[in-house]
Length: 330
Ligand code: 8YV
Image 1 (cartoon, rainbow, N blue to C red):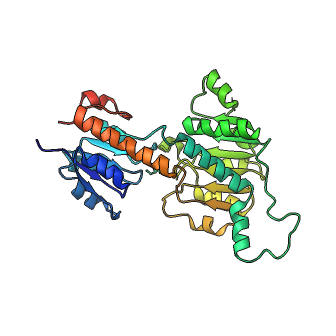
Image 2 (cartoon, rainbow, N blue to C red):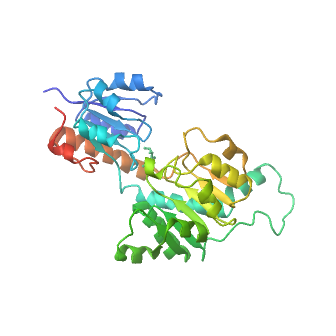
Image 3 (cartoon, rainbow, N blue to C red):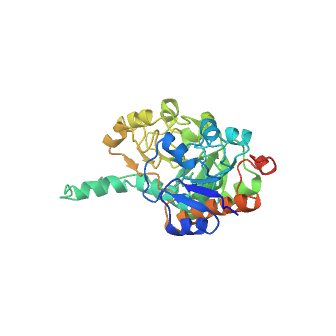
């Protein structure tokens, strides 16, 4: 019997390739070459499955050019790189990698918040530049975390993890805004109070963004929203590029309309808005919120689990369009 063919679009753990190779004929990109769309389509010819990261776009046009493709397994919880409707319409299964990265990503959100509010990166750069010649009372004075008000926009699993850290670990008052209000038990567990977006922006000392990207969440934070925030406030984005209007944020940081920002994701990344690179009161990291070795392994394993389950048994662990399980591409 011929084995299904699977493409791994980006470099990944050798163990991930080895697991896939037990079941499939695998073509891997361990050189991590940057494939354009045409090259990606060419590599996908004859493949039944593809292992993607959040960087590979899968849309109707690509699927029409790859008629044998049956499953796209994303090694990411976010899946705005997938046109799920186009996949469902063609009977192509989409899977993501939820849960396994929740706590790691919440840890990072908190780390970025603390680095931002306490000006850790900015002061480290100052020290490295050799500018620290004398202590001063107001050197890199930032804002407190403990006892302050944490506003979380997007209260899914990761948002809830950040809320718990803030309320239980740091005695913060936690307010949140979400498309729908959480049930009372979850609110109590997170010690979080539901408020409108405007109230959150006006009253929070620290605003953390954890909403999935969609056209509806594009520029959730723009000039108008930044204008509502306290001048002493910090803003942290660990969600997706495009949730924040980066040009408006750079202007607000430059004019000190808010105190500081921490950004792990950017509009058009890996490009970063040039004005963000010139303002000192922003901490910039290259989309690493889920980057611990055990979590990246767990994310890769979950994508592999989905490929094996679907291509060998017609099942899936974390399907985004489960309707396809009963109406697969022929
Ligand atoms: C990934 C992420 O590192 O899971 C997500 O949605 O943004 C990150 O954890 C990235 O997308 C690589 O797949």
